Picture (spheres, helix red, strand yellow):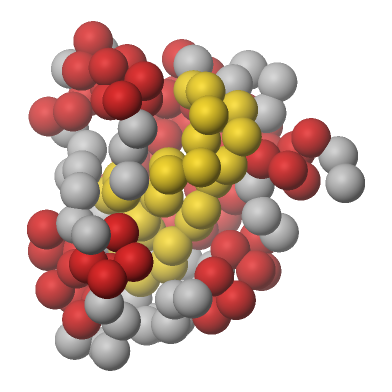
Length: 135
């Protein structure tokens, strides 16, 4: 398994019930892991833009991201812009301290929906309890 595969789960697996989430026809969950850095940003970009291209709401789970730099943040921003262009939303869940610091430094913590909020309610309507998974 190469490093990019370690970073991002296979796209099909990331967006299906294999991760424990139900495809609700309106939301997807993309779970990133490892380093979200310059080296891995092309793969992250491809996965995120592919997820939002379907005009679906996307939650990006950062719980297993061990390091994120400006390239990783740029992928998130581009995906957020594309989602909003298509009338959808991109939110971040399980944001670790290091990633939150970087988001705050760039003042992006006021741009991204972070946490569960309305996403938890939207998923709950479809039988998925995000609070049980992410508390």
